[in-house]
Length: 226
Image (cartoon, rainbow, N blue to C red; front, top):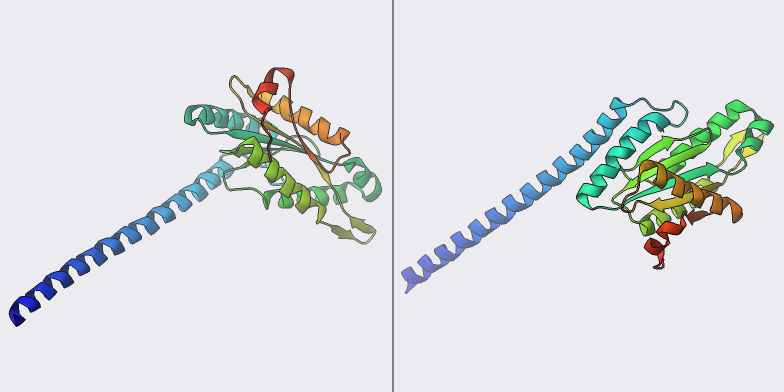
């Protein structure tokens, strides 16, 4: 009886040990895969930054290169059937900043703004200085609902920023147009729709965001977004 009991205990212990080893190996593999994925994402972002020059003031991509990358993102989105959204951001009354404080202060304000925008984005998002004080942000794998939430976060973060100068303190707000890619969209139509959203945000008093529409695409936006 003692021998049989001892053998059974040994058998159970061996099985438990094997199970623990298997579990530990699985956990180790999981951790390694996560690390590889994170490193790949960082490397992909770094290679994108190395591949294209960026605007010296904001650190964002310049207009011409962004169009190339954005077109590639639209193709990827169509192939993977993942949503792609776009933000068009404009600084409210930016000319007043330049007129009152000078161009150098204006550039410092844009640097402050770009850092505020970047703080609310993911590694996969692509930023562009589209015009003087106007920016585009491509949001990969992001629906219109998610894009509106990100836009709201950017609005709140920008409002909290301030640039302290000897001649005064600069505070700014932004207006944001939001659009999501739909079937048969081109770069031009998607950017144009985000721009209509920006115009709506400005018309609604600034320091807010609005979804860009056109009459052909109204059927795609019939559900509430919040």
